Image (cartoon, rainbow, N blue to C red):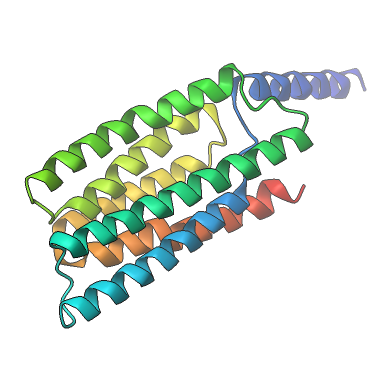
Length: 202
């Protein structure tokens, strides 16, 4: 009987240590909505581009600026939704939204993401568009894996998936748009759904 109590105590201590070192209030629903935003944004961009250049996906001049604006809009909506739903979940779980674990999570996520973003902007300025989608997927995947040490460990699997898709995309750059849709749209919805049923519905 005592051994069972010891095991229970050890389990509770382990859970407390895990909560103190990891930010676990990330919302699965925010992942689903981010995927939906990406799919809607991709559909709008595809419609604009295909109708502007007679069916060929060529990003140039005004068309590129419009697509870039759509991309920024998708990112903005995803960030705002993520912050709102994560804050709501943290309050529900009586967890602080801004503590040492969330700071470490944000730092480890932003360093590879911002690095990748700057590099992508550099190659876009040089009008080297071919590997933009692959680089987005790869650096985003690296950011997720880096952040997973301070959050729900499951996000590293999404990170690995994004990196694999990015590497395949680099081999087939002409399909970059569709790999972007798969990585940022479909995979976010699948991951968000799994996380919602695993964590949010408890």
